[in-house]
Image (cartoon, rainbow, N blue to C red):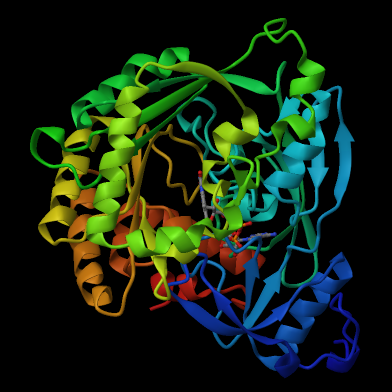
Length: 483
Ligand SMILES: Cc1cc2nc3c(=O)[nH]c(=O)nc-3n(C[C@H](O)[C@H](O)[C@H](O)COP(=O)(O)OP(=O)(O)OC[C@H]3O[C@@H](n4cnc5c(N)ncnc54)[C@H](O)[C@@H]3O)c2cc1C
């Protein structure tokens, strides 16, 4: 074994664990851990971090862009291996749309790299700050989940470094069992060091968008079901404060790619200048300061007023059709930089259950009513449609998800934990599933119940093969899978 002092971890040699101690926060800012953080830039650097952790008797948690809402990349009192400096595009073929990237390449860098050649990533998240490695680790979905599945469905192959330092090539043909478990395997089997993905051909930098303003949950479901066959993307927003006949009211946006020839000037619309999201409001006010003005509204009364205003604004624009750039349509959550800071010191958590389509309407209605009954309404609620996939630890199913953001304060923590238990019971009774990228509150028995004993057994067996010393761990892994 290498001498610990001589290990190259991308930031010079002769490092000790203590020099790298940092507080690592969950994206939502509601939890954190003191961790020894390393940010290598090379494969040798990654290998060096594994050696260092072995030599010091520590475990290693993997981190991409740090956009998971909870504890999926924190590894308290242990090592965090941050891949965000491995940002090279290793190969790009503008004829076939196949790209080979290092894990720290962000969705932002990826779309900006391929768009000029007439391609777009087939699946993108609501923020462009996520990395391809982190997206593969959680098998993320976009606003087109029911049509194209999660990102894993577009990964052709990947290279994965095991804690032993060995690099495994995985695809649907080679090491297929590891391929289907490491995608969505939340960094527990190995580090993706290179990922090959298929991009989607586009003929314009614009999407054709149409809005809807469903007056209740029933109308929201109808809007989706009526438009699924004729849309490439659909996303709904729900006013979680509305009650009675208005329960589940909100707005919805659907979007379609433009066919070849529909855009008179694709060179221009596909250019980066055209896609850029403005960093000022009305050309004057810096958006980076907006979260400070949102801060006084982050309470039940303030957000109920904002939700009501947003709903009526949506009704006024009901049925509107317009063209919007890809970036503007997809990355709405990047419009206001650092908006999460408006939640204050306690931060926020998200709860995103996935429910089969037959049970979703009733289950979501019950969940919204349960939150209201406890006076713990969710401040931002997003509704999406999905399809099943063949990844082992999947959150996907033929149904809907509801992503609900909750403000955290010291006073709310115990009541939110009790609320989450009630919501878990509704989800399990409806044969639903959960998503580790968004999770902060699940308990081991709930994870077991939705994943099933067989999937957990298979995953544990693969972990024993890829990571026999259990080097790869995170706070989430210990919370849910280590008894
Ligand atoms: C504003 C916002 C909007 C979002 N919208 C969506 C959305 O629309 N759809 C959706 O599905 N999710 C969404 N998310 C969640 C986010 O996409 C996922 O949490 C994603 O995994 C984050 O990527 P990351 O690069 O930040 O990875 P991290 O959060 O840093 O890590 C995610 C997981 O991947 C593992 N990992 C990281 N890098 C590697 C690697 N190289 N090899 C192996 N494992 C690795 C980590 O251990 C961790 O378990 C959103 C999050 C935010 C904050």
